[in-house]
Image (cartoon, rainbow, N blue to C red):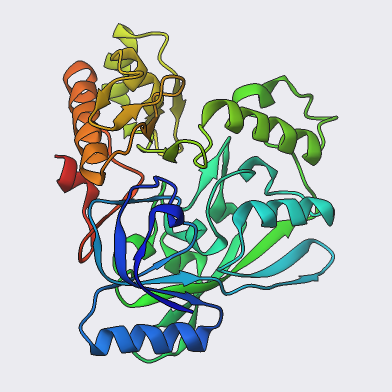
Amino acid sequence: MITNNVSLKSLHSFAIDVSARRLYVVDTEAELFAIWRHASTNSSPRIVLGGGSNVLFLENYSGTVLLNRIAGMTIEEDTDYWYLHVGAGEVWHDLVNACLEKNMPGLENLALIPGYVGSAPIQDIGAYGVEFQQFCEYVDVLQMETGTKHRMSVAECQFGYRDSIFKHNLREHYVIVAVGFRLIKAWSPILHYGDLVHLDAQQATPRQIYDIVCAMRRAKFPDPTHQGNAGSFFKNPIIDASAAEKLLNHYPDAPYYPQPGGEVKLAAGWLIDRCGLKGYRIGGAAVHDKQALVLVNFDQATGEDIAALARYVRMQVAERFAVWLEPEVRFISSYGEVDAVRVIA
């Protein structure tokens, strides 16, 4: 399906009132390749979206938007694991639900994360002590210059904290079409964060974890169908041990999470909150009044409103804590993705 000069307001979770020159809904790899090549021949910018849950459009998009709706799921198993092959156009939360219904636990800590399966590797999505990469076996990508498919290993994906090769070297030439998962049958609960710490590890069930995670996310994040947002706007910063020691000497109540390499992860929401920014507004954009990590489309915000607010928040945190926040959200200009840090620097 093709639509010309279409509004993108309902197709991304920030609900910014922007448009694209053309919009296609693609259901197959062949269709995706053909449309991409056509746009390339016409020198038109193009971008692939899933649910639009982690993007900020700064202005109208001058090119072609392709909505990836390549669906399907197959399941195999052996003595120790379940192996899932899932189309990039499947809704992430629906996958979590389907796994629980089939008694295949593991993804429950990642319940209610918005977006589609194909977006999960790009950000290496994570929540409540669990990261996507822990369950990823491979990512299938389509090489958009040749139409050939390549299966990338976890090592090739170069996963990092809310990062992967798909945000950098490959984003202009490859599109994710499917993801392979490996879920271990010897399941054990991950109960390190939030209300999950109150569960008994010996008795906790995947369904209990799922229910608590859903409740925490609903309490923490505003519903994008009622108030546009992209969930966590900033990454939780990771700083070296000496800088963390200085900060914690001044702010002993600051949440912190030691990392395997000796660095320390801080809670970006706490830093923003301590700057007194909950509810702070610039134009139609606001810091959410209940969760400072979330920037919201409060009243017909533009993309520039959100970017200006992010810039202000970043500066306030840096002045008070000497910590520079980085956006988790991807910024899209008229001609394609731009460096979010540079935009708000």
